[in-house]
Image 1: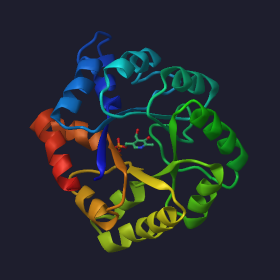
Image 2: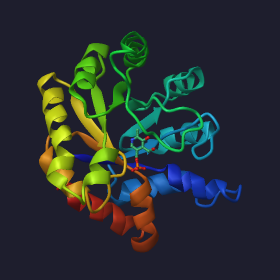
Image 3: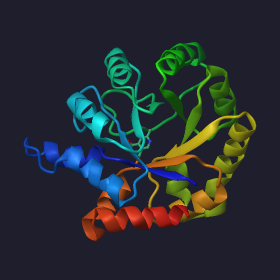
Image 4: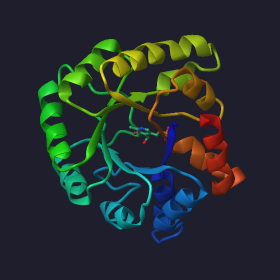
Length: 237
Ligand code: PXP
């Protein structure tokens, strides 16, 4: 079974637009779970432009599925994650003012750094995943860091899907197979949507989890959360 983790950053973005508490992020997370989401993902950034550090503390006790916190492991992020103890932390090499994640780790260049950080999280009982491009050397480098999982950065798949989906999926199939061979579990995310998700899931059926935010929240404006979550779950079956 491929689990659906819903990234709720965009809900926080809407809330922050008016300074109050509408929509209520904690209630939205509970509702998403009740509609079938198998995990909740947040990506707190240093400027707290969507998810605030306080949100993470409030979400932890109410999440009954899997809580995944993603971000760049700077000191404040490390402290937050170690204090919160989510089920999973996903390490992403994004700059503080980056619009969204746009590349994976260079797991060879940053091997020692990643190894140290990953051990710290694992010693605290938190599963680790690291965001990587679909490049064999980066997968093999990820194995060396001791991480439990990788998250394949799927932007290039999504961007090229309509032009030639077989070509778009190819590097992901190759690298996912190599990761599996090395004993790594595999997540995937970025720009996955109702058009491209099914083919991705069918091509790599041994995925553990997909993390989806932007498109799912946008679809929910039309279909509502309950319908939308179930439409995404259907694509993963
Ligand atoms: N995975 C990572 C590491 C991300 O940074 C994001 C975006 O915050 C996602 C997955 C989800 O991407 P999208 O919002 O395009 O579904």
